[in-house]
Image (cartoon, rainbow, N blue to C red; front, top):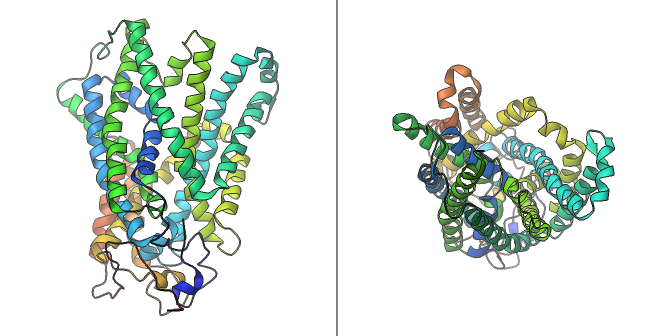
Length: 492
């Protein structure tokens, strides 16, 4: 992607707010097409974590058509949210931390950026660890003698685990060193691989069962309880993407048109999610038909493949999938967040290396095995993402009507539009605190357990409503049209 140079800003530019990776992208030279957005979702929808969630719906008592309906409702909600968030990136060319300066101030934007970044770094390490488990199985299938390395452990991980983890860690860092274009190309490769593999896996299951699968477990949910679970599943499906929806502009800032965002998201979210639901129904219903057990992941099905060559091919595809999800959902956000924190020192690539090192040093396998960390630390941080989404989106679309002064986002001038008081918009912080409190309470207070599946929407809605209510009137902003921003060169 080509970004605006310092001379093009034509403003009192602050090196503490600007580097080339944080600059708005130029209208020309944007390389993300509809296919690239589609492959983002072709990969992410089919993540192993999502399969664990959807297979859990089967275990809770939803049948095949109910699972597909629940996911379909969630997909429609998600498509709307992604369109709203994606258009912001296209119109302004801004990454998420800089976008957050509009509503939180040039300094206050560190709050949403770092919340998003911390969650992503933790999950980057965890997802790399999960991919390590797949790679370990592959290594042992090819070289059974390596089992001896499984008997030696260091800092909670076996020697073979360390070798596999570091190998995957290096691969991801190398891809990142090629920048957003490297990620775009990897996702374009991974998308078809993932879709073909999951379709083949579903076909394998149908062949195993002779085309007959269980449509539900015994004593499935019915009546009101069924519909509550369907809606809860739809809400949770949307909330799963609460992280990615928040910083979708990091990707769409490089899109060639709003049509690319809309078409890529439509095909990647709606039909792809329905396909995902069908695969879930086939895998869960097929395995239940075979042995009366509900599987937890597609890898459970892969492990039953008797042919070593086919098992390795399927495992390799799941490995490609996990790395692709990790790059997209958990690597880009902290790169921009850390770059925003220290723009003079950390560009996108250096910030990526720092993120990866932190993701290694936290020993993510110990985090993953600690339910307290996952549920309370990462869970609470995740609950904060809904209010942040509501505040940022409502401020941009409803309060400012898409009219912003882009150059003012890079200046420390006290007269700048987004300097507020000391660089922090206290109104946004005042809105965030109660909205976050409601979202966290809905997710973690036992007495409010009925609201837990809807906590992201509660936080987002409250954040949006309060943002509109407390917004000052009569603000003046530079207009931004429906086309990407084009800042004139200082030489013309």
